[in-house]
Image (cartoon, rainbow, N blue to C red; front, side, top):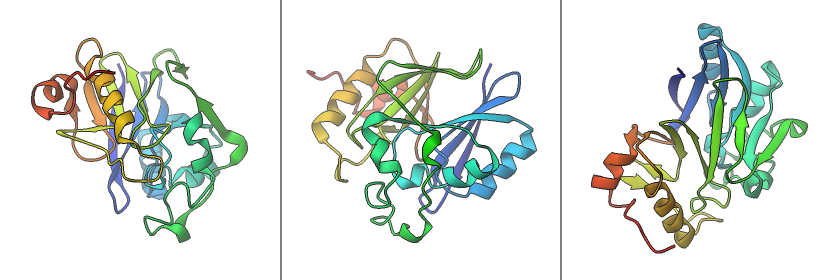
Length: 214
């Protein structure tokens, strides 16, 4: 059974997740800021980081990646459509968000890309299905493991991510939300900001997962 530690990081309180298996292997999802805090938590838990995964490549979701790579030379995974954003203070919105001076480019030879429906496997337990959900950014993606879903800034509790940033698209977002609403079963949803939710709650009360014509 996976253990999930949530760390709201940075001024925008993006949720960083440390996801650990029974053998103390870990992946880090959206290391957005506060590198020392994330590294302290890794050390306190005594886990072995294997990779970092990005739900999307806005700076508030990967700003600590370079710091973590200095301590642990592990790969950083991002959807191919967001790949160029990781290596640009402009495209990643670091400058737009007022964090241009804090931008640090992750080690480029450790950046990996993934595609829709790809399975990312790092250990026997740490395996995630990629669900491409563009709208907030071109490469926005969710990661599913059984009844767990990491939704990034696609889906919040009774809310959704913005579509007015460069690369955002309201029509893509509607299709992505319809896709999430049509997923089989229920999931606990670990969001990119704010509190957790579930797919079933959002289907009933969130107003955004209503099936729409694709």
